[in-house]
Amino acid sequence: MEIKQTALAGTLESSDIQITLSQGNEGIQIDLDSSVEALYGPQIKKVITDTLAAYDIENAKVKAVDKGALDCVIKARTMAAAQRALGTVDKPNWEVL
Amino acid sequence: MAAQIFANGEQVDIPTVLMNRDRRVAIQNQLLKEIPDAAVVAAKLNIPGPIKNNEIIQAFFTTELNNFEAWLLERGLNFLVKVEWLDAVTGPERFYFVFASGLTVKKVTTEFEESTSFRRLFDLDVLVQENEQPRSLFRTEIDYPVRTCLICGRPAKECGRARAHTVDELQMRVAELINLASQQAEKQRLVNRLVTNGLRALTYEVVTWPKPGLVDPVEHAAHPDMDSYLFMDSSVALRTYLEQCAQAGINFKGDQLELLFKEIRRFGVAAEQVMFSATRGVNTHKGAIFSLGILTAAYATTMAKQGTITDEALRSTVRQMLQNLVKQDFNNLKQKAILTAGEKEYLKYGVAGIRGEAMAAYPTVFERGLSVFRQAKGTLDERILTTFVNLALHTEDTTLIKRAGTPKILAEKDQVFSELQKIGVNTPTGRKRLQEIQADFSNRHLSLGGTADLLIITIFLGLMEEK
Image (cartoon, rainbow over all chains, first blue to last red; front, side):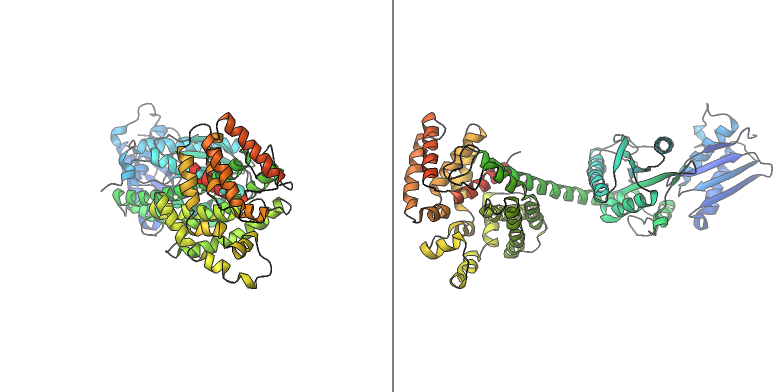
C-alpha cells in the first residue's frame, strides 16, 4: 500500500508515543526519539515495522517520539497513523490490534 | 489479591485511554491559546491497571486538589479552574490556569507532588505557549530528578516499559497510599471540627441571655469593661491557638500525656497575649483558654489513638495530662510576687478552683453540664440556659468568691440557683426570675466567670457529638 498523505497520531503526553508517517521509497525508515531508546529502541522499532506490515506498507518515513509508551500503545498509535496516511480512517482495522 | 479500593469501577481499554489523551491534548492547546500568558496545569492521577476511577479515587483526587489549591495561594499563585472531568472512566482530571511563569509553576507543582508519599500519585503537568507552540515543562528544567517507580524507586519510565511489576502489586501500593491520604484527610477534618466547635462554643456562650454575673448582648453591668462584641473579638482571636492544641493532640506520640499538657501550655501563654491584644488588655477568656485548650488536645489525642470517644476515655486522657497540675502550680506560691485570682483563692480558702476541677478531669462539666445538655429539650438557647443554671448551682466559682470577698457567697448562690432550677428556667416565671437575679448580680458587681468557662467547654463537648 502506498502512503497518500503525511499523517500523525498520538501525543507527547507521558506513556504515549507520537507517530508521523510520510512517503518514503527506501523501505521503513524509523527516526526514533525515546528516553528509553538504549534499552527498548529495537523493540519499539519492531512493533512499528510489524504493525505497518499488517497494512502492507513497505515504504515509509516514520518519525516516532516516544514518552515511555507500552507496546500496545505503540501499536495503536501506529495503526491510527497508518489509517490516516492511507485515507482509511472511516474503516478502522481494529482486527490488527 | 486485589486491593479493596479497586473492587469497584469500570475497566478501561487501551483505545479509550488513547482517545482520552487526544482529548486532553486538544483541551490543553485550546486553553493555552485562550490565555497565552498563563501556564496551564493539567492535574490527573497515575493509577496503574484497568480501573482508573471510582468514588474512592475521586474523593482522593478532589481532597488533595483542595490542598493543592491552598498550596498555590500560600505561595502567591492565583489560579482559575477551567475544565474538569471528575467522572471520566480514564481517571479524574482538572485543568487550571495559573498566573505565573511556567518555571515558577513547575517548581511549585513538583514540590507538591513530592511533598507526601501519596501525592506522588498526582501528575501535575505544566504547559506553556512558546513561539505559538504548546510545550510541556520537564522536571529536569527545575533541577529535579525524573519520576521514580512507585515500588522500586528506579526511573518510572523504565519500570513502566518493562512491566517490571504486576498490576496487583501496583494496585496494592496505590491502595496503601490512598488509604494513608484518607487517614490524613480524616485527621484534618477532626482538627477543623475541633476548631470550629471551639469557636462556636465561645460565641454561643456570649450570646445566651440572661446570664447572671456574665456578659450577654443585653446586660453586662457586672462587667462594665466588657461587652458581647469584645467577647466576639476575643473568641475569633483564639482560632490559631485551638488549631495548635488540636494538631498537638493528634500528632502526640507516646503515653506521657503530661508532656502534651506542657506543650499546649506554651501555646496558651501566647494565646493569652493574643487575647489581651484583641481586647486591649481585658481578661475575657483566660480560663477558657486553659480549659478549652486542654479538652481540645485531649479529644484530639484520644480520637487519634482510639478512633472513638467516650466520656471515660476523654476524662482519663485529661487526668493523665494534668496529673501534677495542682502540686506543681501551687507549690511555690508563697514565694511568688504576683498572684493570679485563682492562686490567691487557693492560698486564702484552699479552693482549688479551675485547677482542681481540671485535675479531677472536669467532674462538674461531665456530670453537671454535659449530662444536662444532652438531655435538655427545646431550642439551643433553652438547652444552654438549662445547662448554665445547673453548672452555676454546682460550681465553686472562684471569680464569684473574689468579687464577693468571702466564700460564704457560695451558699447564697447555691440557694438562688437551686430555687431557680425547681421553677425551671424555661418557664415564664423562671425567665423572669433569671433576669431578676441578673439585675441583682449586676448591682452587687458579682460575677460567675468560673461557671462561664465550664459552660463553654460543656457546649464544646456537646457540639462535638453532633452527627
